[in-house]
Amino acid sequence: MSKEFTIGSKVRVVALPAYVKTAEPMPMLRPPNVIHIGEEGIVIDRRPGGYWGIRFARGAFLLDSQYIESTDTPPESHLE
Picture 1 (cartoon, rainbow, N blue to C red):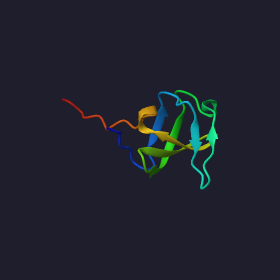
Picture 2 (picture 1 turned 60 degrees about the horizontal axis):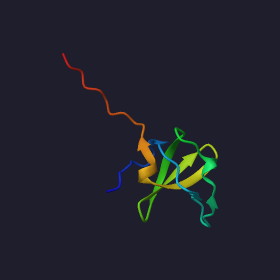
Picture 3 (picture 1 turned 60 degrees about the vertical axis):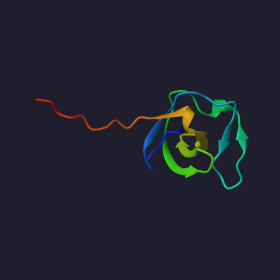
Protein backbone atom coordinates (compact mmCIF):
# COMPACT_ATOMS: atom_id res chain seq x y z
CA MET A 1 0.00 0.00 0.00
CA SER A 2 1.44 3.38 -0.95
CA LYS A 3 1.63 6.34 1.38
CA GLU A 4 -0.39 9.46 0.69
CA PHE A 5 1.09 12.95 0.75
CA THR A 6 -0.50 16.37 0.43
CA ILE A 7 0.49 18.59 -2.49
CA GLY A 8 2.85 21.23 -1.11
CA SER A 9 3.98 19.13 1.86
CA LYS A 10 7.64 18.53 2.63
CA VAL A 11 9.10 15.05 2.24
CA ARG A 12 12.50 13.49 2.92
CA VAL A 13 14.33 10.85 0.87
CA VAL A 14 14.79 7.69 2.99
CA ALA A 15 16.22 5.38 0.29
CA LEU A 16 17.55 5.77 -3.25
CA PRO A 17 16.13 3.89 -6.23
CA ALA A 18 18.41 2.40 -8.90
CA TYR A 19 17.68 5.50 -11.02
CA VAL A 20 15.45 8.57 -10.83
CA LYS A 21 13.16 9.92 -13.50
CA THR A 22 12.85 13.64 -14.13
CA ALA A 23 9.37 15.17 -13.74
CA GLU A 24 9.38 16.90 -17.13
CA PRO A 25 7.02 16.60 -20.12
CA MET A 26 9.72 14.39 -21.72
CA PRO A 27 11.10 12.47 -18.70
CA MET A 28 14.71 11.30 -18.63
CA LEU A 29 16.37 8.71 -16.43
CA ARG A 30 19.13 10.10 -14.25
CA PRO A 31 21.63 8.40 -11.93
CA PRO A 32 20.48 8.30 -8.29
CA ASN A 33 23.30 10.61 -7.14
CA VAL A 34 21.36 13.71 -8.27
CA ILE A 35 19.52 13.42 -4.94
CA HIS A 36 20.79 12.21 -1.56
CA ILE A 37 19.34 10.30 1.36
CA GLY A 38 18.00 12.83 3.84
CA GLU A 39 17.44 15.51 1.19
CA GLU A 40 14.14 17.32 1.54
CA GLY A 41 11.79 18.40 -1.22
CA ILE A 42 8.25 19.62 -1.80
CA VAL A 43 5.51 17.47 -3.33
CA ILE A 44 4.32 19.14 -6.54
CA ASP A 45 1.91 16.50 -7.89
CA ARG A 46 0.67 12.91 -7.93
CA ARG A 47 1.41 10.72 -10.94
CA PRO A 48 -0.07 7.38 -12.08
CA GLY A 49 1.52 4.22 -10.74
CA GLY A 50 2.15 5.49 -7.21
CA TYR A 51 4.72 8.10 -8.21
CA TRP A 52 5.03 11.57 -6.71
CA GLY A 53 6.50 14.62 -8.41
CA ILE A 54 8.90 16.23 -5.95
CA ARG A 55 10.85 19.49 -6.34
CA PHE A 56 14.40 19.24 -4.98
CA ALA A 57 17.26 21.75 -5.13
CA ARG A 58 18.63 20.11 -8.30
CA GLY A 59 15.28 19.78 -10.10
CA ALA A 60 11.97 17.93 -10.02
CA PHE A 61 11.95 14.14 -9.98
CA LEU A 62 9.43 11.31 -9.80
CA LEU A 63 9.78 9.00 -6.81
CA ASP A 64 7.72 6.07 -5.59
CA SER A 65 6.25 6.53 -2.12
CA GLN A 66 8.52 3.79 -0.70
CA TYR A 67 11.54 6.11 -1.12
CA ILE A 68 10.12 9.12 0.73
CA GLU A 69 8.57 10.03 4.08
CA SER A 70 6.71 13.09 5.28
CA THR A 71 8.62 15.65 7.36
CA ASP A 72 5.50 17.62 8.28
CA THR A 73 4.77 16.96 11.93
CA PRO A 74 1.21 16.97 13.19
CA PRO A 75 0.42 19.64 15.77
CA GLU A 76 1.22 18.48 19.28
CA SER A 77 -1.63 18.12 21.70
CA HIS A 78 -1.19 19.91 24.99
CA LEU A 79 -1.71 17.51 27.85
CA GLU A 80 -2.37 19.10 31.21
